[in-house]
Image (cartoon, rainbow, N blue to C red; front, side, top):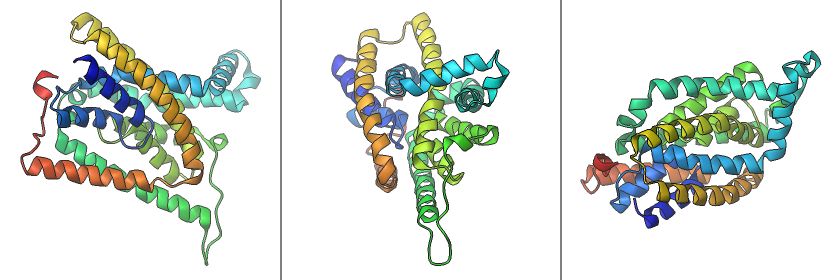
Length: 291
């Protein structure tokens, strides 16, 4: 990987990590369309550390409050009913599914899951799921002639069962094309959470999973010596800077706008990939051989 490739891939990672369109799919597709080698799961995981650093800074007050309350709840029984302390436990509980499946499916994540036909399928299917969840949420909020508008849930109503469901949705993002934020936000909307609550918990839930994955890949890459460290670190820094701007914009966007533009984009991109692969313009394994 050269410096130009790392710049472009860092920009792509930063632009797509927090949007419900799948950053891992876009890194894979960018390389395939440009005729570059697939950057691979290790590159994706390491550059995600940069975007998660953006989450840590953007939500620093929330995170500091949650971590402080959680530690205090370990020794102070009264603190265990505190919302922030409970959020700490719920983030841990919600991280269990992706932790278990991430280790179990590691070989698939780095191999078969990167097939462009599978990515196209997940882009379309999860796009339709997001569209359905978004439309259902809008109908509940607006009410109608024969039904009253229903108030949606906030994070104060999050419980262990819902946390695990959020976690299982996040685990689906191990397949490129699903999208971590897209899957968890869809799950949240279907469970009647507000867009803002679903997105906020999605971003908080991603922190332990992404950092653990990044550090795990970092360890393997260091021992294996198969990563171009200069370009990879540069891409991670670019992803951090761009990601911070995107997350700030996205949190404002979802308070007043629907997810339909992302739904349309996902479906059209998936159809384009199928068309290019079907016509022989693009190999479903483009760039994999030297990833």
